Each structure stands twice: as C-alpha cells, then as structure tokens.
Amino acid sequence: MTDDEATTPVRQLLHTRTVTCTGYLRSDGLFDIEGRLLDIKGRETEMPFGTIEAGGALHQMVIVMTVDANLVIQHVEARSEITPAPMCKQISHAYAALKGLKIGAGFKQRVAERVGGERGCTHLTELLGPMATTLIQTTAPLLREQLRLRETREPGFKRPKHWVIGTCHTYRTDGEAVRTLWPDHYEPGTSEKD
Image 1 (cartoon, helix red, strand yellow):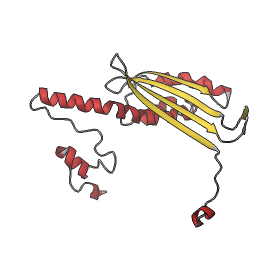
Image 2: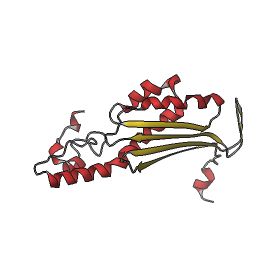
Image 3: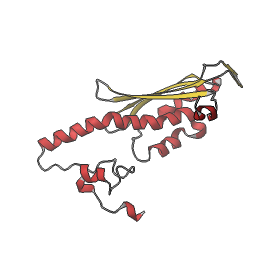
Image 4: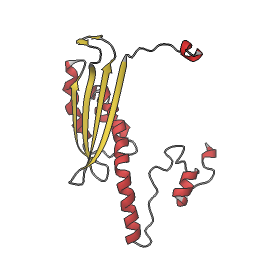
C-alpha cells in the first residue's frame, strides 16, 4: 500500500446521474434530439412516497425535441417514466409550450419563461440545456457542408460571421482559432479591453 492509498478516504457510492443526448437526422429533413436523464441511488433510500432500493432509479425521464434546419422547435414530447412522487408525471405535457422557440442566444431564458419554476419540472428543464448543445453539434457539420457548396456555386459568396465567435476562450475574437479559421472576423487585442 502506498502512502497515497493509505491517506485516500474510502468513498461510498450514493448517487449517479447519467444524461445522454442523441441527435438524429430524420428522413423528412428535420432533426430529432433525444435527451435521457437517469438518476440511480447507490443505496436504499427512503423517500416521502416510497423506498428506492440500492441500484434503483429515482428519475428516468425522456424528452424528444423535433427541430427544423433553422433551429426552430417543431414538436416536443416529454415523458417522466420513473419519478419519486406520482405528481411529477402530471407536468410533462407543459413542454409542448416550447414549440416555436428558436435554439440560440437567449434560449435558456425563453425556456424558463415557459416551463421554469412551478410551470415545469426542474430535471426536465435542466435536460434542455445539453439537448440544445447536442442540436448544435448535430447540425454543425451539415451547415459547414452547405456553406462550402454555396461558396463553390456562387462566386463572391462571403460566409456570414460564425455564431461560435466570441462564445468561449478558444473562439475569442482575438484568438488564434478565429485568426486562422475566420480571418475576416479576427480583431487583435479585443480581449485585453476586458
């Protein structure tokens, strides 16, 4: 036994949350983003509406969000398959109110206005954040290909400013990535102003 092993506290598994988000291109040209949330208790847990055995689920929830190429939500289906309280399943229908929202800047705020707090479920609402990111990761390669095709078909076509510019350290306006990938949008010294 090493000194590190002797001083490392023993850990007991109490809870595991798994979030899985998957993006699909449908045959009709729309995208389905499926989000799944699973909470598993590591030991027997007494809850107000019953006991969860060790290894049992506290939450098992699914949202399927159908989105068009403009990132506008066309349909949402939410299901709370396993919940700690029977009343939790009563709010899943509320997520249909997200139809018509565009995923992009301000999305989380608009979600909160429609299904935040008592108008929704904390866990289903939290799941929408990684689902939105999954949509971007799902559609980005297709958008890049469309822009490449347009450049070859339309002489003089200039790509619009990429949405990712200015969203993080790597894609800051005066960073190496922007200078290399989008030189027209490179702004030296801009992050030093902050």
